[in-house]
Length: 619
Figure 1 (cartoon, rainbow, N blue to C red):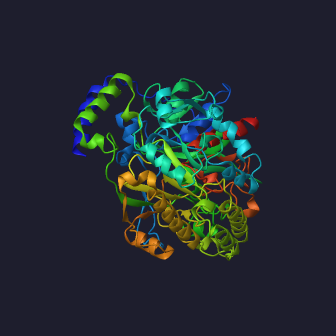
Figure 2: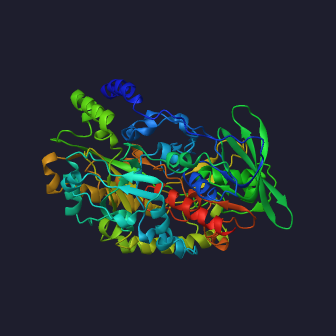
Figure 3: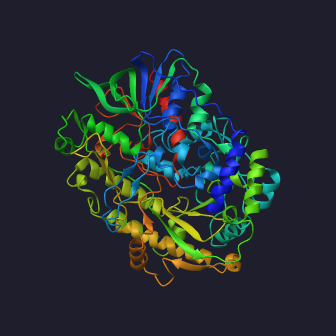
């Protein structure tokens, strides 16, 4: 690490002059307190919607963002996505002790910066499968299946291919019809470590389907995937430089930075109507109210959207009463259905790696220096590679061919409220939604075109990601009754359902046989953790919990205000309007009814695009 740090600092000083120095243009509100649209949250979906809604010069848009507009080399440089996170750009949430993970506590990662997660994430741009989104539509959300989402994925992106010689050497393929001419420029790095080819061959030898491009809906098997890296600049593409900065001079588009939305403001006539937002400037501690003539749009994310609804009097009655908040609208779905991707690592000792390899930037001064020189001169090379461009999403029938049918049967046979948080007990609406979700998930368990577990296709197999993409455990996001305006009470509740444990254990066994394949024999892989002596579900999971190898979150918090029919425990309709409240919509990750098999940022861009289209259609 010392080598990387010292050389990187010197290189950064030399590179700084080559980087654009213009600060993002941010328009402050000047004495105005009423807009057509007020968007709470300047993350991905919020900035996408703000761009599209402000295309109409007659419509005014305000974005309220709690963070600043930070911009520095560690944000721009793709390789910096491998660095430890900059905690100043996050909310700093800490979840409750996890009852099924030895009562350990984990971070609730959510960005607090203009651009949201696109500023701080690992830069993977991968979409879910056709089956993932057809499952949304099957839950009663007309127009939200793959055919309804795909046009908005395409609309948001421009794909820039890697050089032909690199594509030929690594057999990098893509589907040009999967992309459009959108603001977000994405690509595959022109530099790949040589051993990646061997790991691809091992996955293929193990039976993983090699896809032309998983972003065309075939997000199962193994594939090359883009990063949110603009090959034209060699820098990170994010919502701010793609969707906000190019249109920031629009007089009808306004952004408030360092501003907290503390409460929704309503007209309480015959029907509850959202009319504005109470806000507090974090730097001056002054409070005011901004008003929306057409719509208040929540884009605050899966943690803060349910929190803001609850502090405003919308949510589970018992939660609001415990906090002393008058109940304006009872809805037990607010903060329920919370999902993320739990994951663990399988560690191996790997020998005989080719050079260069992912450790070379740390251990080889000459390679480090040449990488920085190439980046300064051409914006190409190893520093344009974030955390890799290759992933596999393996369906359960491949992972566990002997048990997948019985696991599906077990899921549909579970008692309705089994393994669920207390808010579900005797709750007819929430349990009806659970039954519908489990029926659909049981189908996905058996679907050979639906990824169940995510694996990295690495350049070094010393640590292998094993992420559960279709968890059936459910958590909650609730306000703290002792401090409603403070951090929300986050319960991942990961691994509460024994089927998640069974599938995660099966997923570990599957990757072991990949690493044992002849294509990887030259690396002499030896499993270090959990350890090859642990073979049963129980042993694999128990030792992994004891060693703190299982983490409840891949930083993909989702689904806490689900888009489903109200009678099934939904918060918003397929038109994104909150049930029982006029002029209030939600457009962030909280609306997803089931978390897809993917890193979710691509879907946030698509949701932002689709949401803007829906909202515009209201006139």
